[in-house]
Length: 491
Image: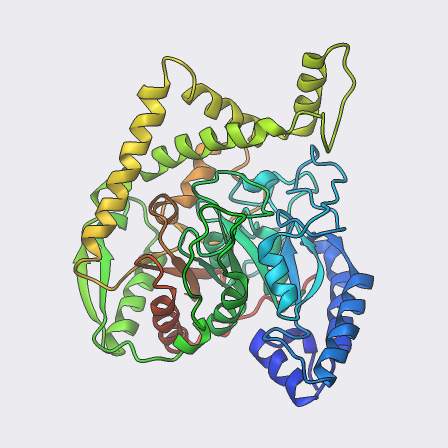
């Protein structure tokens, strides 16, 4: 048997079912891989080998009794904003300190219900605020990929950088992630993995540390389209503890993989052909169009005219919600507490010490746009733009079944390159924030590499609740692209 950690989730489940290896053996392989690689990659902020091996042993016992679940025995990584009962959860921030939740997030509870094994908690931008995984209190994550003839460390993207790096480096079979403005899809594109942000409300937000509540949505990062479908089937559910959770049936998303897409109409938005779009990304986009056309799809040009206002609107709405959500971190109930002579001084000292620069920046922006005299001028206008963006998609989807765009405006960039320029960093989300503002599903899959050998991603956007259609289209593109490059091991 070759290296067990290189298996796909589907391949591992088939091997476990056939008895080729046990969950305990599989988990031991991942535990050893994490111990060897994590000092260089910093993908895990907390590995839980003892817990993982105990869970794997219990999983093997269930399988022996014929009680195997859909993900029975599969070792997974968990982004550190999903609360895990009895296991430290920090959301990448100092202010949460050594917070150990007494409860389980619904998404992770669903995974354990289906037999999955937790390898540990994955690094992330602090409170999911970032596009490079450099704002984490635990330090930046390294992308397993490096450019040809270069030893320069690249970012894996953010905020789910730890999840993407771990999947790409074979440190878990798949990982949970979250997406507020592109935090699943952008890291997936940077690491040659597959990531899907489902329709808003498809996955429960209960037990997820909040950033911007009307935008946050959980989803998976995986090695293949089918693996992502298997993960989403388990992660998604209705949950009475989340008022935005949708009370609808969860389909078997994997059943859509490989289905015919003949006759589907695919929209290509000319509004996404921004000035300065690299020729390599434009070429890949055209190749994606050709792959779908060859599969029998009809290609149509669509207009999304308010796309140009998406980033400004997002960077008003998201910080506004963040400033409200993060008001709960005051040094009183849990997490970091600094001394002070009065209540106000404790608040000020705890928040000043506990939050990093990017989080402080967004809290200040959010408080400003919500303040008297500016609420109507900024926040209300941003909400109106959000409505226009959603209407653009509604009109486009009257004529097409899905929309194809690039995932990011560039390949992975070096760690530190954009840290001093927040606006340049925010521009990484230019192709992804629209789906969050409109609540739509978006999937990123690798389509090719640039001239430096770094992966580039393509994004499929679907109608609400039509993740299955995206999986069908993505599986056709995955087969056509035949993306096989892997990062060369340097760690």
